[in-house]
Image (cartoon, rainbow, N blue to C red; front, side):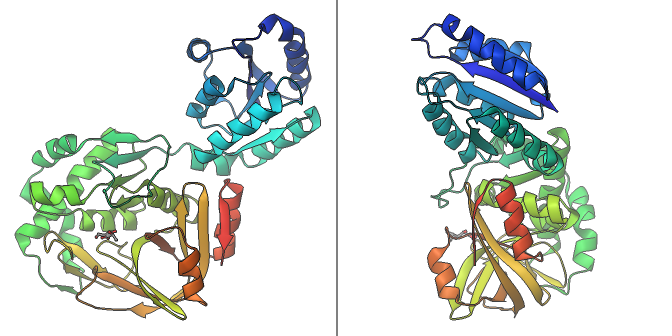
Length: 402
Ligand SMILES: C[C@H](O)[C@@H](O)[C@@H](O)C(=O)CO
C-alpha cells in the first residue's frame, strides 16, 4: 500500500526540534507501507513546492501529522488530492487539537478521514482504507461537472467538492453547433416509444434533442462521468429545458441532476456506481400520515412515459414517467449528512398543478420523516435502504436511517 506522509510544523516553531521524531516516525511506517514524502512543511508555499515534487494523487492514503498546532491552514491543502486521510496527533504542542480540526475540514469535503494517536491505530486505519480501496476510489475519483450555475432557490446547497465548471456561454457554443436534424435523430426513438406526446411539437422535441447532443459532446470533451445543470437559465435563452436530456442520460447510466444541485448529483453517482441503478431526483410535493409524493419534470425513463412540457415554464420537453410498484429507498444527501428511508412505490399521481412525474410512496410515519429531513430534493432508487445506509456510512456520511 502506497502512503503519502507529510509533517506540519508551525512557522513559529523550529523544524529542527522535530527532525528526529519525524525520522523515527518514517522508519516505523516504512516497516509496513511503501512511504512517499516524509517532509516537514511549514506553509502554503512549502505545500506548493512539495506538490511539484511528489504526485500525491497516486497514493492509496495520506498520513498527515501536525507536529504542532497552527498547521491547519496549510495541511488542509492536501484535501485537494481526495485521498483517504489519517491524521496522526499526539498530546504535545497542540498536535492532537490540530488533527481534530483538520479531520473536520476533510470530512466536510466528503473525504474519509480519521484521527489516531498511536502507531498501532495508524496501521489499523491504513489497512482498513486499503480493504475499502475499490469502494473509496469509485467514490473519490469520479469527475463531475456543473453546467451553468446552482439555482438560486437551492439556499442550502453548500458542498465544497471539486468539479469542472462549464459556463452557460460554453454550453451555448456547443448548442449552436448542433442542428435540428441531429436533435431529432437523438430523440426519435424516445419519441416513438412514448405512450403519448401531449404538448411538445416536432420542433420542440428536436430542440430538446439538440440540448442532449450538446451535453453529450461536453461530457466527452471534458471527460465527465456525471453532471448537474442550472437548467432554468436555459429557458430564456434557447426556449427549452434539459429535462428530456437528463431523463435520457440517467436511463443510459450517466448521473444527471437538475437545478445545478451537487448534493443530488453525489447521491445519483453513488446509486449508479454501487448499484448500477438510476435515481429519480424529485421535490417533496406532498405527504400524509403514511405517504409522501415526490415530483419533478425529469426522471429516468425506467418504464412507460408521456412527453409533456416542463411544468413551470410550459416550454421544452418534460417527462411524466410511471414508476413501477416495488420496494425502494428514498434518501437525501446534504453535505456529509444523509437521511435514508425504506419506502414502497405505490403508484403515480397526475395533477396538472405539479411537476410532470409524480410518484406516490408509502412511508411509515411520513410526518416524522418530513420533520427530520434535510431539505426539499430527495432521491428515489430501487435499492435496499439498509445496504445504502451501510455504504453511506462506510463512505463517511452521517446517516439517519428511518
Ligand atoms: C421548490 C423549488 O423552489 C422548486 O421550484 C424547484 O426545485 C423545482 O423543482 C423547479 O422545477
